[in-house]
Length: 64
Image (tube, rainbow, N blue to C red; front, side, top):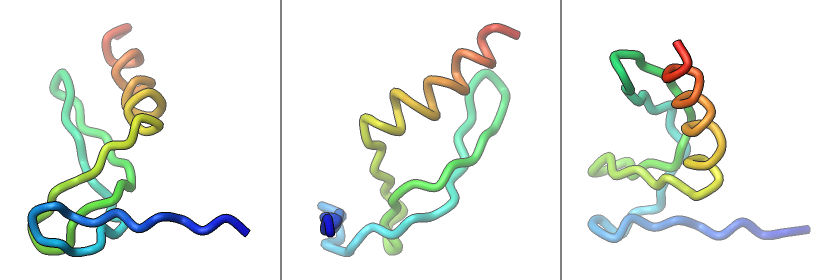
């Protein structure tokens, strides 16, 4: 079984936890669950999220 690595906030030294987070782009808002620091709110955007979900939403909004 593959063990997942823990993501740690560099500012607070707290483990990041998955949280529903909103993003705004071109006047539209969308939500996705991403790792977020429970203390300071810093988020971690993995390459997978940026090239996947965020890129997909960006293309859909720009086509409108």
